[in-house]
Length: 465
Image 1 (cartoon, rainbow, N blue to C red):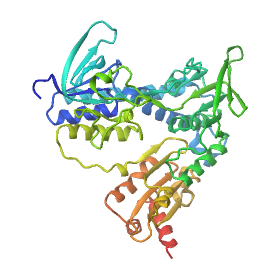
Image 2 (image 1 turned 180 degrees about the vertical axis):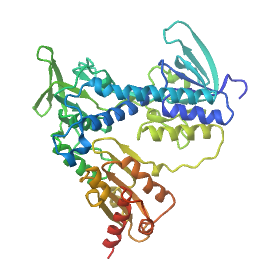
Image 3 (image 1 turned 90 degrees about the vertical axis):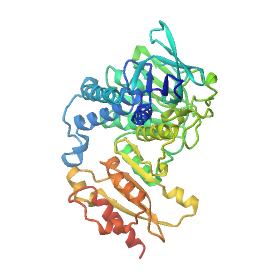
Image 4 (image 1 turned 45 degrees about the vertical axis):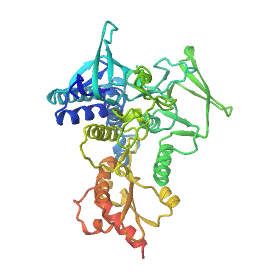
């Protein structure tokens, strides 16, 4: 591989690209990353995961939402919350993460190149200056495509970034709306719908599917839907949008549905999915075709149809989470250089930062029923746990799913405060082949949400008779 300029060349500096580059650098390889923006981190740090989760945290704090179970529905930390209030915290976190990411790449001696990358042939990449002035070609023995995705835009929708906008535009909003229509109830749409609803915005969530987040346990989603409605969020499921008409003179938009209904609101958030950011890569020259949404197909080692070209992260599709993208990047780099690794994708946890948050690992009741696996469940409700009373969360719960005969853990599903942290206890026990009895025999700190595991275990064993 010494005939090439680089042992590994990574296109995209998001979570998948970072982890692939650093892993290869730690193996002593010559590595470079091309990033077409002036900042590293991709959508994760700049417009997606970090901003949305920080925005959520700012909303929960300033609105007093977490404490309303104790102090009442009218409790708030700040009376008139503005976008500037929310962005103050968000920008601080973004700048901090950018600095950490850049430092990690520097200390691992990963060359960072600000340029647009495209293929000339399977091993040659053209780096074009962002301002369009000049280019140079480099060669690489292995390539990782980690360009992520961009919000899907319908050319018939009149986007202006303020009245009709996508999730990437949220940080650029000049003011909070009093009413909002969210079109698309995927993870991003559901998260933003509940975040704005927590601020007191009257939100209508539209989706042509009949159920929210079908990959999540149905009972968890039932609880989410109930709490959405309790927070004055209107759901229009099984509905399809026919058109969006901004009305500049009245500073509002009208969303027309194919069923004949009309929804009027100050703003509309369009969130019907993401498209792979591969259009500018000249994939044909590399012999790597993309699908109709720009996503790349890979095998178990994250190789594309060209064996030396790998793809990982959001650009390969579901689950499109920062955590799974990081792991995919690591695995891709290890596979590229023949390093043995062990990973268990079926135990990847999912964190969904709606309000309340959701986290899940393993199989759902619906999957086990379809597969004919005998199982039982154990549940613990936050209102039964001292920590739940202290935090004012009386609606959250944790559910353990375990095998009816072997008693091994098959899945853990949580909705409520701290769900995305709490899930890792169940994940660890599942990875080690543990049984539900483990939680009965284990002592947890008191008072903590972790006690839910013990309470749920007792509940599950009691169901066995």
